[in-house]
Length: 626
Image (cartoon, rainbow, N blue to C red; front, side, top):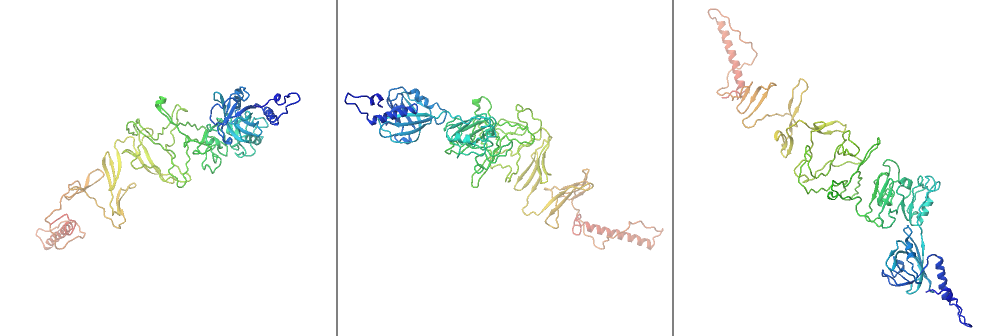
């Protein structure tokens, strides 16, 4: 206990006055100096580091090494017996991260001066108070049983930067000095909404701006940062170093790492930003400056101890008693020539990296196995659902068809594949199904060339009742209708020739042509079994028919070649001749008349012999056989 003045300077017995001891005067002077610094409290030091009542009039630290101590325990009464609970409880009244500074001064001959920041609230331990402290510096060692003065200096509430017209937040006068001064305190600075906007003659960085910053929620990004010149590196909405890393401004919300980095370096209504992190090297993609929500993930770094997820949402319909939407986006494009996105994912895969997905849907069906057709909607699990016309409850009724369900476009590079179905992905169903019903009736698959011309189509009719199919197997290509084969195109390993069908112009017929690598190609029509072929005219009457039996003409059934015919001998006459006109003769035959009749018979015989020879199997067309 410090000796009071009346004791130190008291008169002794007559003729033998007591001379004051220097140690007593020195302790008394230190006590007086402590009182000058504010609410100085006198305590005795106890060496135990246990979180418990240190005893009446005593204090202790939670670590024997003063420089690493993080907590102090003070009895509810000081060494003079005074109740000091109200005084100690006031030490956390400041709204700053650092509530104030405690100075410990020794009263013994050995000088002791130690300083700590109070970085948390005062906790009632029952018969004692607990403080959260952080060592600042000093000299000397605490000795058990010695008395010390504990002086507390409050840092006061950090008022931040108060906008004053013409000085701060007028949109013209630079606020660099004011922000730098506030940052030098290394405390939480509250930034009120400016009259116009804060202005910065030059960008501010973390090297000159310290502490943490809590903007007025109604302030906009441009009002606060002057287009990104002020980097809110250490801001936390809660004002605590362990709090959620979130800012709320009037035009956006910053979450995670985005609350510590400015979101781009260009301001405007369009996607003009080059980076949404602190520099382009940290983020090769960009995000629009006017985005509503910005968040990053640092992967558990020291500055941002976040989970490995950027955005996670969970829905359980049994808890909501209704349908659930895990993620929903409503977009209204109401400005001419301006685009809008409901969802955008900009992906970048570095060399050597694994798979990168713009959207992955991992589906798990624990209900019935249902199959959907274009004309029948069923209850089931759908990986992707695109509904034309949208929801009439939102924004009114659709007035025109939507443009496209999926559009695959070329950026700075192309896609290797448009649509890939992995093996075993489909049970045994359809890879692609469409309906020809509804608006427009028949629908088609179209292919276009580089000039924009439609060069190939597959069309389905709204009135068709027969299923047409093109099936491929190793032997060829089969076209069928209603399960019945209509055309089969088979493969031959050594084939070099092929059949060409050429349509005719006006007045011309349709041609079946033999084409290929050979110079001279013979075409062949072959029946099956005993069958043959018929060639019919336009009125469906048979003109030529042939089969295994033989050949027929003009609807006559094919007959076999006639047998019993030998090949004529003698002179064959194939010259042009006039038809025999008959011979005029007298009542009695004369030589000339007989000769004319003989010549006529000879000519007929020679021409008949020529005709039979041409029809005979060995010398002609094979219609007559031996």
